[in-house]
Figure (cartoon, rainbow, N blue to C red):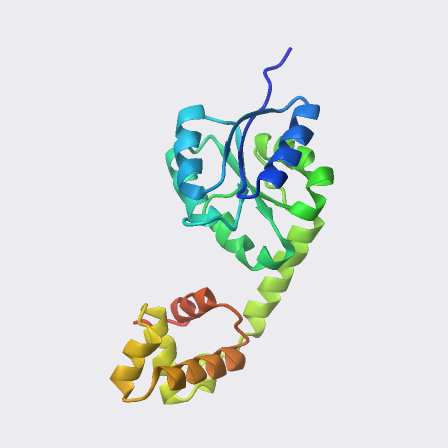
Length: 212
């Protein structure tokens, strides 16, 4: 008889953890530990050496992407599967770049998670139809994103300083304007570039060599 697959479950909602644990156990998969935050996930992964980590992307404190990056760096044999909500599709590429092996939406976890676990254990990547669509959409969004030439000089400055980690107040002090005005410039430039999240500003600045 083959050894049971050993899974570490990382999810900050106890009800979701409980239902997933019951589902996995019903298929003969052993849940060796549970964590509700990224730091605990890293510690337990090193202690328990699971075959697979089911990792929620959105966690309190350290997020699931950074926890995945650290786990895969320290334990390359352990496969990490993302558990995501629909709104978190934007993080899929970041998760895969962090060493993640697959992607399961919580809404379809009861249908997909068992197949996903066996797929990644076989050395493959599991995306599912939703994951493939998310990647395609992100690819086309990146292809369609306008260049920085559409920005005014001041908007470009706000973009650069935001990407470098400066606050609105600090940028405003450099420009001699209020933090509220800086926020207005930032909202305007994000609309021009088709960006929705602050982290996308950093990615955009790096992609277009704005940080030098």
